[in-house]
Image 1: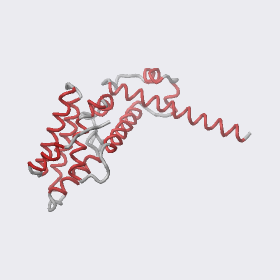
Image 2: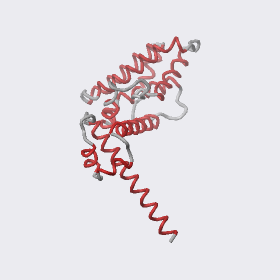
Image 3: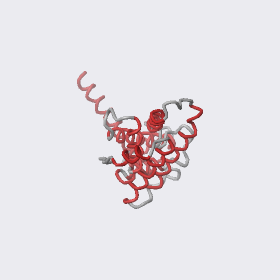
Image 4: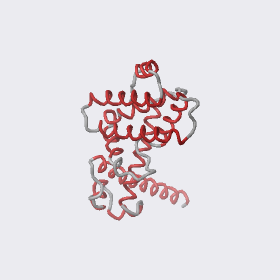
Length: 215
C-alpha cells in the first residue's frame, strides 16, 4: 500500500512539473513573438496543451506567469553566458567576453534573445534585464581592475548605468539586424565600453583579438 501511494505521489509531482513547464514554455514563446498583454489565459493553456483549470494550480495571474517565464529565460541566459567563460579568467577579459557573448545572443539563441528584449523597455527598476546583476558585477570588477584607486561607488554609478543601458540597447538592436552585423556591433560596444572604463588601445586590441566562440 505504501509503495503504491509513493508511486502515485511521484507521478502527480512529475505531472505537475510538466504542466508548469509547459505553461512557462508557452509564455516564453508568446513573449518571443512580441505578445503577452492581449493573450487570454485560455489561449495560453491551449498553446501549452493543458486544461484551462490547470493554469490556476500554478499561477495566480498572467503577469505572474509572464514574470516567471522571463525570469527563467534570464536564468538560462546567465547560465549559458557564464558557461562560455573559463574559470580563472581575469576580470577585464571576463567582462569583455560577457559583452561580446551577449551581443551575439540574437544570433546564437534568437528566441532567448527575443524573450529577454521583450521586457527591456517596460522593465521596472530592479528588474534584471540582460545586463543584470552578474554582468554589472563583471563591469564593476573590470572597472576596479583598470582603475585601482577608483573605489567610490558614487563616482562609478554613472559609468555602471551607462554601460548597462548600452548592453541592453545593443542586444535589442541586434535582434532586428542581419546575422553578420551581430559580431560587429557586439565587439564595437565592447571596444567603446573598455575605453569608457579606462583601458588603453593596446589592451583593447589584445582583448578583441581573442576568439569569441560560443555554443
